[in-house]
Amino acid sequence: FEPWEDPDQKPLIQFRNVTKRFGAFTAIDNLSLDIFEREFFALLGPSGCGKTTMMRMLAGFEAVSEGAIYLSGQDIGPVPPNKRAVNMMFQSYALFPHLSIWDNIAFGLKRDRLPKNAIGDRVSEMLKLTRLEKFAHRKPHQISGGQRQRVALARSLAKAPKLLLLDEPLGALDKKLRQDTQFELMDIQEKTGTTFVIVTHDQEEAMTVASRVAVMDEGRLIQVDTPARIYETPTSVYVADFIGDVNIIEGHGTKSGDGYDVTFAEGQPVLHAKTSRDLGSAGKCYLAIRPEKVSISAEKPEGKTNLVKGAILDIAYLGNLSTYHVKLASGQIIKAQTANTRRIARRDLTWEDEVWLSWTETAAVVLES
Ligand code: ATP
Image 1 (tube, rainbow, N blue to C red):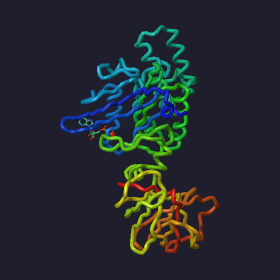
Image 2 (cartoon, rainbow, N blue to C red):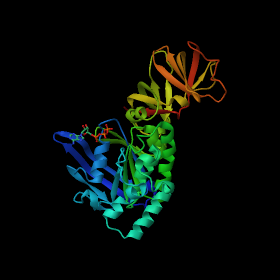
Image 3 (cartoon, rainbow, N blue to C red):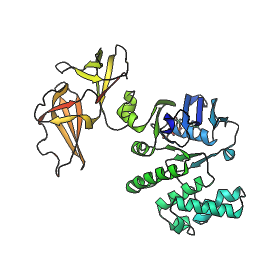
Image 4 (cartoon, rainbow, N blue to C red):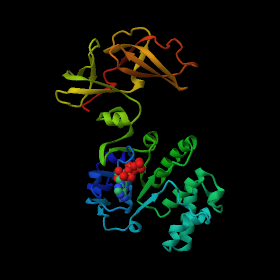
């Protein structure tokens, strides 16, 4: 069982009909959400959708306007930030430059007047967890950016919060280091069992680290699910389009057998999408097809249900992948992506070539809007 699928697992955080207004502006709109113990949860969405506001309400820097937030069943509305079992790690890290790494990590524990040996033990444990033992006596400016990030993490976890909020935690790191650090973050989350909630602009990062992702728009939750289900079975065009690359074909759908038949242009074949979702009689609808699920070939393949013909407009060579932009006679442009397993991308296909595109009935997701 993953935590959210385990019926005995308790939610750590419960948003119940939470609304947050700034003056006349509604930043969070009647939102309800459970985040479970030991989960690594990501908030994703465009700028201004309310991610930071969600974090600030959890940390206690903002009060809710309506509704309530519960932590382990307790309404945390009246609890001040420093009394919540919640900590927030900021992108800037906010380390004290004049203090050693050891003292930075010990800071909150000293402020709580813990016994000296308890502080020593806890700091050692945190240094070990974040592989910083060797740097304990250095100052923040004497270590690398990645190491500073780990100090900030060690300091945020020192007081063993139940919930750690991570606001763009890897934003200051370059791409390669960022990717390595994502795995480290996952490892530390698992070892400590602390619930992590991360806000990131990088959707790949959210998909990598999180066990569940919430896609938000204008203060509302659009879809909350595992990364795989968000990617494979988005429930709206918004989510399909927000996560990864996708072809969206607008058409008219009618129920047919195990799914929907979709007509999308004159002279083009009727497409079929298998689905267990009930969209009623459908009518105007959209097909969402990931480019890597579209096969491309110069020869007409046999026995394909979803088969269209077009001409190559563009080829983007990405090293491990190539993306082909193919224009149909009816004007739609469809992207097909192939893995470049051979040394050189398929040389047999080039600009303006006539090609056939096909995909399976389960590769296309039919959506209302
Ligand atoms: P970004 O990705 O750019 O950080 P976000 O999703 O974190 O965006 P929030 O910072 O939560 O978005 O802001 C949500 C909305 O609420 C925005 O439209 C913002 O302008 C508004 N907002 C946030 N804080 C305040 C405030 N103190 N006063 C007025 N409006 C605010």
